[in-house]
Picture 1 (cartoon, rainbow, N blue to C red):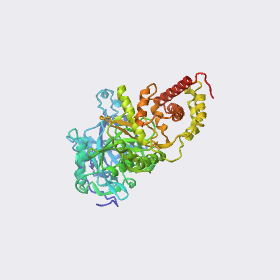
Picture 2 (cartoon, one colour; picture 1 turned 45 degrees about the vertical axis):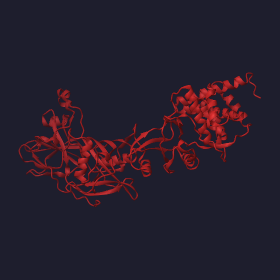
Picture 3 (tube, rainbow, N blue to C red; picture 1 turned 60 degrees about the horizontal axis):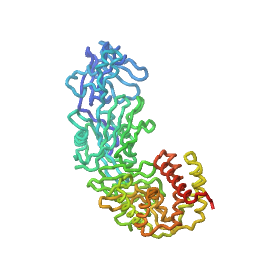
Length: 601
């Protein structure tokens, strides 16, 4: 396969001839027409004495003036920007050319010797017809644009993923520049996937199965010359045959290039699509300005990406990490929690298997979860996922999928709820094995208390802040509970229940050594007013919690409530806010019932 070195255009095969009315001006144009349209602007109407003119563009490299007058006479219709060419003998208008270094020349279609029955010359876009002839405006068709298909052929190279690029040659648009193999949807008889398969075979000689074609990115592009188009870019990682130059008159070189280090001399349109793809975006706008070059210029990068929703996967670096771990992934489903933080996707493999890919919000959460998976989580057996792969630089992990659905929002009978809480107790006991290590649960929360109270001030009821401070003051006198391994975020959304009643636990990014009651903070809100649930959990746990442990739990609940109120108010999370307010109200009511005189001693 030949890597491009020099730009040597080859002769084009699609050649058309034309000229003026008297024959003094003659020309040939080679290449395919670009953006055929009718224009009713004031310049076109006044020059022609007609409501509109029928234009198309051709590659300037394919234009030759062959008549006795040579080039036409030129008139600057837009001084400094564009000029129109006409015959100085008969006055026929034939061409339009932008100033500077244009890649295309405009040709009046009616100046061609034969323009009948040519689908490629049918005007796609009516332009400003109402300016010269208002009565034409009602008949104006909807704006239409060509649809391009681009092949993003990808392989693994020694330094990372590589993509195939070819150098355009001959009388074509952007001759001498690198571009992905591409073409147009031929008409209503052909869909985009069929067009990609056809163009891929015509340009590279390889065969692609429709099942191996994945949508990568869509680009709404406008060239410096003005025409707009839609580019559909499709990723292909598996094919039959070896890529080769199949159209030497249109392509004179072809090679693989690192996706992370794309070469100079690329078509800006193609470069925009690859940059968007590399950064994990599915949709991009790339509207170039009249003074821009067709070649990519970093100083005039017009790429503008938009976020996507739905089943978009993670960025390419995380996708590659996951696929190195489990193989080709056919689809991604974002299952992240709506709150800011870690991102999680359900990844479905080409063979139907499922995994979960998680990108942590920071190195601390990543380290905690990986350490838990590598040390004590395997002891939970089938009740927890298995770590498949971890990358601290991303930072991301891949874990196995579990059966069941989240208990968050699930509806069960009272009897069934008691059984579920009994199972939660059993699972918590399995997690809470003795562990030696620093317990910073209370010190960390206390260090943030005054800041959280200040941030939550407008949401707190009178006396709430003093109540929490009094609890904390008593907590510092309590004996420290035994330290165990804790999940750190044991709540219903991190618990799964399958149809047979088996319980599973996920999400260990907050796991650390601490008191056992640390894992009861989010569960205690659920058994408020339901002593049967509290008893069921204790039964499953194997023992009741001591009075000292429950007093310590009350302190942790209060601190968590204040934290939730300030955070919920900051990020506009109504559930966190309401749970915090509800918890403080409950704790104060319980304290007042136990001490109706309000003694502080």
